[in-house]
Image 1: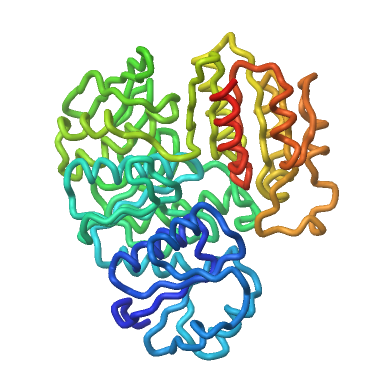
Image 2: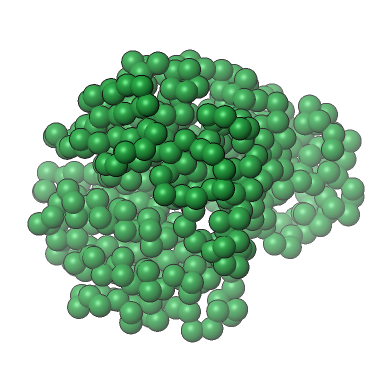
Length: 452
C-alpha cells in the first residue's frame, strides 16, 4: 500500500458518518483536497461544506469525479455503504479504495496511539482523553465518535506525534489500529449481526488487547477478562486505579481518585452518572501514566463539557428538565435512566426511545423491555433501519417490542408525530434517546420548553 503522503486528493464515500467526517477533517486540515458523497443533508455535512469540503448528494459520476486520477487520489468508504455507482466507478477505474478503518490504522502506525475501545463508554472516554491532552498541550490529533463540546467537533489537531482514537469494534475495525496505549471500557454483547455470538465478541476484544505492547499501557475495567496482564480500574471498589466518595453538590459531581501510590481528593466535573465517573477514572489513570501531572488532570476534568447527545441536559424556568442521549443498547439505557432516577427520584420521567437496527432490537428485545420499564411513561418510535432492510426481519417492529414492556402508559409513534405527542404529556423529566434520527426533535423541544 502506498503511503498516505502519495495522495493529494481524498474522496469519501459516506462522508457524513461520524467516523468518516473526522478523517475528512484530518486530511482537510493537512492541506489536501477533500471531496465526498453522502445521501443525506445533515448538520454534520453542512459543517463540512462550511469548512471547505466539497460534498455531492446524488449518486452520479459528475465532472469533479471524472477529473480525479488514480495516481493522486485515495478513495475511502465506510462498510455501512452498499452498492453505489460512485463506488463502482472508482473500483472499475483502478483507484485505490480503502475502508475507513484501514486508513485510520495507517495514521496510527506513525504516532504514539492512545486507543479507547468498548461497546459502551468509548466516546465519552476518548473525548475526555483528547481534552486532557489539550489541557496538557500534548502534540496530538483526535478522531472521535461524537461531537466533543470542548472542540465543537469530532476532530481536533494540535500536532501529529500522538493520536487519540475511538477504537470501533463494529466490523472488527479496531484490529487495523496500532495502539501503544489503550482502554477497554466494556465488552458486552452487541453487533451480533457481525460477530454471531458473545464468545466471538470477547475474542475480538482479546485480539485488540494483544495489539497493545506488554507493560503498563493497557487499562481495563475491573471484572473484564481479557486474557493478558492489564491495569484495572473501577468505581466504588478497589482496583489498581479507582474512584470513590462520589457526591453531587449543586450541579457538580465530586469524587476522589486512588492510584497504587497516591490518593487525590476532590476531582470535580459537570458530567452526571456513575458510569461517567468510571470513564473519567480510566482517562485519569492512563494519562497520569502517560506523564501528565494530577494538577493538570484536575483542571482538565473540571473544564470538560461532555459530548453532544451524551446526557445533554437542559433545565428550564418551568422546572422541567430535558435530557437527550445517544444510548441504543440496554446497558446504555440502564445507565442513563438509572442516573436520572438516582438524581431525580421523585420526578415523573417520560422516555421517547427510537430503537436502532432491526437486528439489535431482535437480539436484545427482553433487555430493552426491562430497561424501558423503568420509565413512568414511554413513547416508542419506529425502528431506525440504518443499513438494514425491514423485509429481512419479518415481525421485528416497535409494536412487538412494546408488547413486552410492562408499563401502563406506553404507545408507538412515528417520528413525525412524536413532537405533538410529547407536548400532550405530563412529565417532569423528558428523555429522548436513540442513535438514529431522533436528534431531529432536539431543537424543537428545546425551543418549546424554553417558552413554556
